[in-house]
Image (cartoon, rainbow, N blue to C red):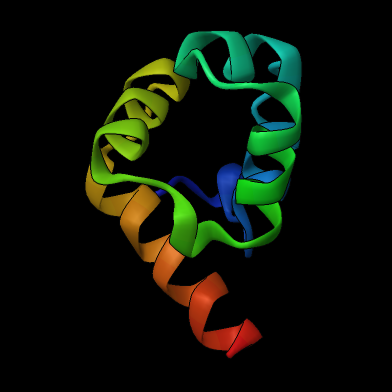
Length: 77
């Protein structure tokens, strides 16, 4: 489970709380800047491989990333 200081309702919020730059995450995922921001707006567009890389990069269990994505997707839809 995510520690209390890392509770986030969106991937964008999680990235901000982890104090990593969006540029660093974007380059780690090796995707275009516009594509990255589009995916942050609609998290359903992230592929599972990208979420695994993101979880590893942020040092958070993959299942917790999935929970955030699921929550964000349900809230928006």
